[in-house]
Length: 234
Image (cartoon, rainbow, N blue to C red; front, side, top):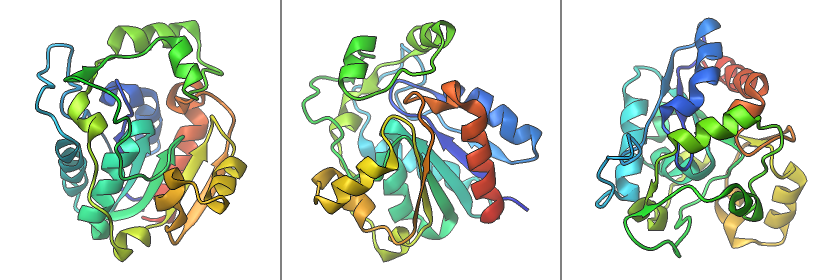
């Protein structure tokens, strides 16, 4: 029996970003819940008071909606609230899949001012290190059309440090924009960005070069990895 799966999308995205992966997982018999974080519900949503703590709580609520420990899959900027959730309810999480991201406490972008951070241009995303490799024109258009500004308070926020029980949760990094060798090199160099990854007890790296949004550009690879982890930890 496989563990239930909670899918949390990264910046500017709602639960819809996981549709193709969730469909694949459900077709194979997995119990799946995709999450839209507070403030990302629509363009009209009030994001002015949304905090990182609100995002952590939303992830915890999704996890606790299942009776059994879950596999938590977090993409991009969702790594911070996802990691925060591991500290809140470690016994309810069987494993974490970091989809082109890594555990961190935040702040993710302290330079952002105001109540929200709109989707940057494609060039700005690439310059910031987000690969567009493998994304079709249709996928880019859908992303731009459905993107919702990220709550500024969440982008500037931090999560509480996690304890030993959370650090012991098995973690898998799906490395798409950068190879795993770059992560391990940064850990060896003592990069502050890698400080939380460096203290995890059990980490597996999976390399698959593609875009920063592999749920679209490598749907089968992403779904198969999450399914495998869910089967291993069910």
